[in-house]
Length: 131
Ligand code: HEC
Image (cartoon, rainbow, N blue to C red; front, side):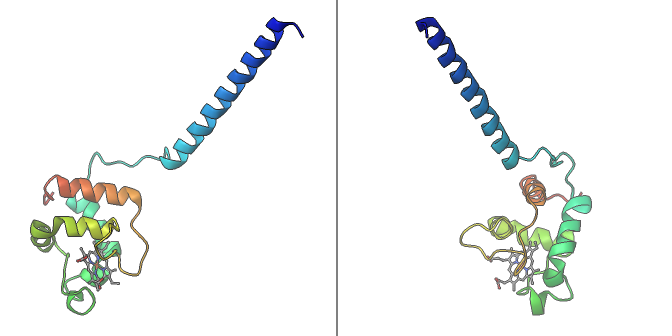
């Protein structure tokens, strides 16, 4: 094979692998950040946070059951949640995000979907308004 042809073949091969590697990398990124989208543009207490807590937390941290099932912590209703967050913001986020050093919540259940976690964190960081 003439020298120039060898170089052309090598260059072609290199190009092929670069393209291939790029597409693999892209695939992985898609897996890590699924393009399904998480809408965090309109998080509010009444439409987002309350519904999540109602589904996943009030079973133990609701007003009627908190003392027997939720270690005395009721998060039902904005005033209760606000009172807890005023001094335990890190504890609340740590528990739902399963950070080391906090009791993972919901207790005995699976972690909240990533989009719910993102929305709750955002709302807490906005100062947990009663909106
Ligand atoms: C099955 C009952 C149950 C459910 C459901 C539950 N919790 Fe708890 N939670 C508890 C108990 C009991 C404790 C006391 C600590 C412990 O036993 O781990 C607790 C403690 C906590 C604490 C304090 C954690 C700490 O490390 O001090 C937070 C914050 C909390 N829960 C938030 C939540 C949130 C938010 C949800 C819903 C996403 C939830 N919990 C769902 C039972 C529950």
